[in-house]
Structures are given as structure tokens and as C-alpha cells.
Length: 242
Image (cartoon, rainbow, N blue to C red; front, side, top):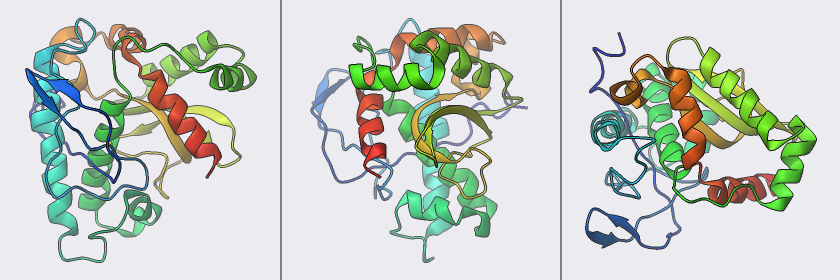
């Protein structure tokens, strides 16, 4: 089913702050960053790196289709779903806080819009790893960084069908790992996994099938080579501040 829908849905968010210029192809561009409090952009935002920037772990063709077809479709469908409604202009956190009362088009496309933005921004090459403070929090919660990876990998591997794996700060302010189906995320009032997202991995087949085919486990293992720990560290500090 997922393979037949390979060139379907996807969407993105932007917010107020700017991040430093990144290379996209051969051009220097300034890309708007967005956090949990962000509202949708009036235009579909650029990917914050070249399609081939994460090779060999994520190939350029998959990145191009994933971003320009799936993500763009989620963005377009979400913007159409909220047009002319009270949701227009609301932050994504506010939309998700009552998403159980919204049509499926809002939940599914809003989730795809937000989750993919979150995913792109937690990917990079050459990241230094968790900060000392975050490493201590990980060790307290899981025993070690390796134990965190093991728990996260299990959540990603055992998510039946399509969905996402998450590292998040739960409502008790503790680090936790879980997964959500389809385009759900921990900010949604309808989600069984609730809290502030810190790190995510897309385990829909369209995210990895061109390179890894049915070997989801290989894709999950490769993911740790391109985790943007600086972004995760920043999200953790923001989450602690509420």
C-alpha cells in the first residue's frame, strides 16, 4: 500500500527565528527555522540542505521525492484544510491540542506537515553528540546513550505499518521513547504518546524503500549517523523551560 502511494503527501512549517545560511545545491540560502510554537508558512519552505547532503545514509533520490512530493503535498493539503477556519493562523501546538475535534484532513495533513519539518531539522552530518547535560539526563533515564538508542530502535522497528519513533519529554518531565501511527505525534491530544518531542524518525516506507527496500532495521541503524544532536540539545533545554 505504501509503495503505491510513494509519491503522495507531505508538508512543512516555519516560524519566526532565522538559522544561519546553509548550502542548498550551489546556492547560499537563508532558511527560516521553526519550533513547536511556529505557525504555518505562507510558502512551502526550502529543505535546509542539499538532497545529497546525508549520503550515504539517506540517498539523494529518496530525499528529493520525500521532501518535494510527500512533504509538499502534506503542506498543501493542510493549508487547504484550515483555510477560512479558526485554525488559520494558529500555532501547530494549538492545532494539535484539540486535533481530536478536527476533521481527519487536519489531523493527518497537519501531522505530516509538522512531523516532516521536525524530521528534516533533526538531521545533519558531523554532529558532535549529546551535550554533557543532556547525556546525563539520558543516562539517568535509560542507563546510557547506547541504551537510549536501543530503546528508540525497538520503538522504530516494532511500529506496525507506517508511523514515527520519538524521543520526548513526557508530561512528568522525564525522557521517554515511544512511537505513533500514521502522522500522529506527541503533541496531539488524541495520541497515546504525549509530551514534548525532541527527536523523531520517519518509518513510513517512502522514507527508506529506494535504498533499503524492506530492511527497515538497516535504515534505523544508519539514522544515528545523521542525528543533529545540537538541535536535540536545544529542544531539550527549551522543553525544560516549558
